[in-house]
Structure formats: structure tokens, C-alpha cells
Length: 318
Ligand code: AKB
Image (cartoon, rainbow, N blue to C red; front, side, top):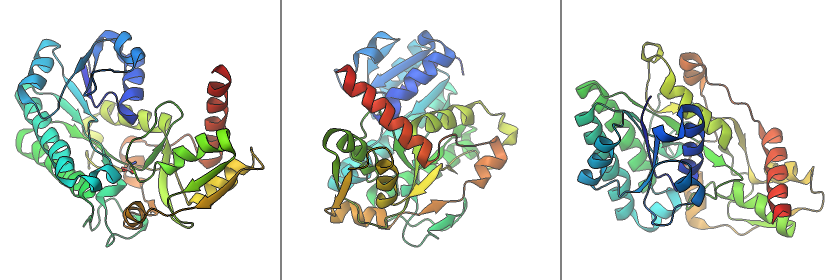
């Protein structure tokens, strides 16, 4: 990786991925592309930045040509809950966006990182120790686009030799950037509410167990996968990766170890609950561990401790 483009650079993963990539490869070698006119100041000032609609092939091609891009981290996508509100837009952005990126990559021989998700599974998938290769019949538009994206990346590799790699991310937890429109967003909201109000009303019901990961592990996973020698990869794309698996009451109990008067109640959102109920409880990520040495650093206790410390500092600073 010498010249990198990050699409969706203003999103939850994109913002922090740009910073991590700029630290590793040099600020000038990482172009951040976001769809919002007003990107975060740090993002705009710490290296090259442009606005880009990923469905616009000529615009994308110009950026790739101008900056001599050889690797694209394609993070632009609508998340699960937003996708259920507007399934047609989700199909357009998630599928036509990916196809445009793959086509430009084919033309300019770029490598691609394309994130998939636990959403690519469905109610017929084994929910516990979900295998790497298993039945995938997602019932949400988000899941349909994520599974189709996995297949499309495999196709571009087999047919055109495009080095397309990817991970199935679980819910991602970060203190820096808020998530937007996901089903697992409660696991971030809960921290802000705990610090501010000492209580939280959860939109998923008790017992809803899902895979999760702290953002530093997620960024490291994406970068490590893109750096690994290709001959080591049997799967290449759509690797199961996880770091922890918990239900709302378990993260609440962990937070209570630091904030004893924290309380949680439930007001279930039927749309997001139905999405969560169709997803696995815990994925088996042994293929990622075996093929490229994946190993998370943060478990539930370490993640909760650091989230509370960082958000506490942020609050004190103003
Ligand atoms: C979402 O909830 O939509 C995402 C995901 C698990 O892919 N965080």
C-alpha cells in the first residue's frame, strides 16, 4: 500500500481509519473521501481530503488517477437500521457504490478492502459459533447488500484478479466517532448516557446477544488483513472476526462496576430488535486467526474501562 483512498471517510469507521492509516503510511499518502461537504476539521487538515459520491464513476476515477491510488478502503455504506428505512437507497449506495469502486479498481489495478458484517447472515444461520462458511440467507436489505458485496468481491478476484479482501465486522464501539443508523449502536449510546445521566433506555431487549469489537481492534484488523502476504489467504474476503459477545444486561453490569448507580431500562424498537434477532450471537473467527494471525486485544472489561476513561476525559475537557 503506497497511495490509499478511504471512501466513507466521514463515517464511524472511516474517520478513525483515515487517522490510523495516515499515522502508518504518512499523511500525504492517504486521501480521505467523504460525502459531506463539511468534514471534520482534523480530517481535512491532516491530509488530502475530497468530497465524493461513490456511485459517480468519473468522479471516483479522477481521484484515483490524480492521486495514483493503489489501494481503496471502501467504507461508504448505509448501516442496517437506516437501510430498513430506505431499502432502495441502501441498495443503490451499498451495491452500486461497491460496483463502481470495483470497476475503477479493475481499470487502475487497485487492491480493495470491502467490509462485510454480521448482517450478512440470517435467521437460518447457526447463531452460536457461526462457521466461516455456512448458510447465508439474510432477511434485511443491509444483509442482502453485504452478502452480495462479499460475492461480488470474490467474483472480481476470480474473474479479474482484483485483490479484494474483507472482514465481517461485528458491532463496533468507539468513543471518538458516533455510529449512525446501526442496530448495535446501543453499545455506544449506553456509555454517553451512563456518563451524562447515569441511566439508559435500551432499544434491544434483555438477552439479545451479539458480537462486538472495540474500534482499535477493528482498525488493526483491517490494516493487518490488507498487509498480509496473499499466499497465506485461503479465504481472502469476508473473514469472520470478533472480540467479545454480550447482551445489553452484561455490558450494563460491566459499566456498573465503574458507575455503581447506573441503571438501565428497556424500550424495545421492533425494527432493530427484528434485525438483531436475525443475526448470530457469536461467530467462530478461527479462519482469520489461522490464516493471518487475527487476535483481538480488548475484551468486554478492557473495552468498558477505556471507553469510560476516554469519554470521562472528553467531558472534563469540555
Ligand atoms: C449495524 O448495526 O448495522 C452495524 C453492523 C453490525 O454491521 N454496526
